[in-house]
Image 1 (cartoon, rainbow, N blue to C red):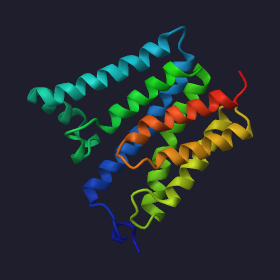
Image 2: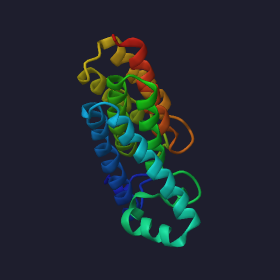
Image 3: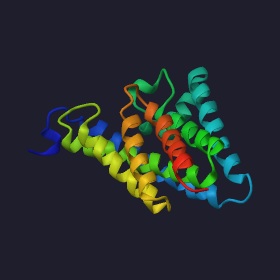
Image 4: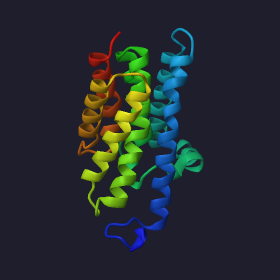
Length: 199
């Protein structure tokens, strides 16, 4: 059966929007290595500035119609219909990245950012393909865990940290309220790596 005919399949325009969101979400992972590469506190300033800009845009698009129209023109396809009244996914992701960078050592934070960038889209893709219409599926959680573990290993952590990070990422990715995983995955992965990886 084609994916579009599967139970719970999204309309074509919604599926395209979700594919674009996942691509941008995955691409945002470059911010972790970039912040790590930048000298001194430049990485913290970069991620902090992105989070502040996202919050300002959120406030502006609610308070000023001209700002809302500009945001919708430039990036409207990245917003889900239900994000008009609350923090959007891109904003919570920016906040999660900045919080991870401020709270954890740079290498742990950079790895956690890449985990959040790649594991969540992997979970969404696997859930859409194999999850039988479930909002959060076992297939998605498995994909999240596998990708998170691989990223942590590639970042130089040992197998225990990778296994623990994969488990924690998969658990918090299943948070029931929308976009919470954008905050929780980088924080949980960063905390796990800080605790289990050598200094």
